[in-house]
Length: 127
Image (tube, rainbow, N blue to C red; front, side):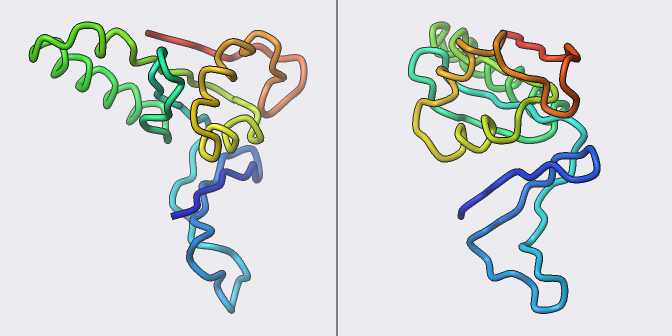
């Protein structure tokens, strides 16, 4: 499956590019529409773990951390990082396509422009 985010009308739209575009609309299958995006990744490797709407991804991260801690994998639990907010769509798509890119984006998070309007703050990172 080839996924790609696009910014349309102030929302992030996640499309499945592996499916053929609709003959009627010319659009690929819409998988998600959200006002902000969250990305969960491994802080050690930069590997993407999950992405999507912030409430779902934060919930996934909290549940996964809890399960890992319960099983004794404290280091793995502590390595799950979630970045959410109005991130630049090209950076989000690089995270989907390039192995380990999430860590690169995270180290430059303070330099990245706001994903929707220039000059506004609104990025958040939690661990």
